[in-house]
Length: 271
Image (cartoon, rainbow, N blue to C red):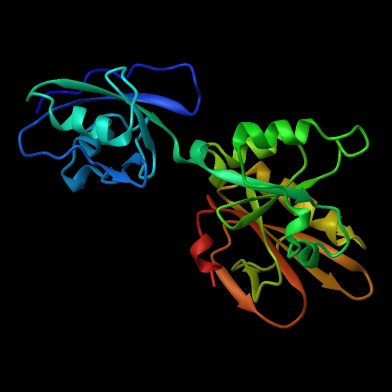
């Protein structure tokens, strides 16, 4: 089969262009969902033009959920874009500009340093309205001088993430979202390495300080590090760092796990 033309890069970091050659009997791999034209069949083995592109361009994969925003430089309603793809002649090179699904997502935020955050998060009055990435960042930037340095909880897709600065918030809306540390509170188990326990990276009477230390440890190597934060009487909260832990132990007591979606062995710790 003929090689795909080289990719043309565009300026926006959350948008990219793919070039697909129309072939007889091969579907494009995009479908209308709601009011958007969305990538669905993206794997090389799914018999789609998008899958052919992905096989030839591993450095810039089109992913399920990414949204088609223009076809051959023309924007329009999803049905118009789909019709343009369907009416293209065989052998035609179709240039699709796509936007990452993460950039289309919306999130809301509240302050993270409130008393008993778990209870506070149940109060809808503490949350902002759902906002797109740029709107949310502008909202945070507009805070008063007294509140500008306070940590925030950003909720996207039903998951809460504690962020200390704007860069961490941007990551939640980016392709690197799976590298962001995530808190799994009141876990039923904790990591165990064959040779024993992990490395103690923090000992504190502050639960929040111990959790932040865990996030920093995970952020240093999100694909391999998982942390457990456990309360020990009378010494307080202890954070332990584990590398490539693939076993889970269970027990009583209060403990939290902190790891990123990119953690290689996270399926072991998913309830």
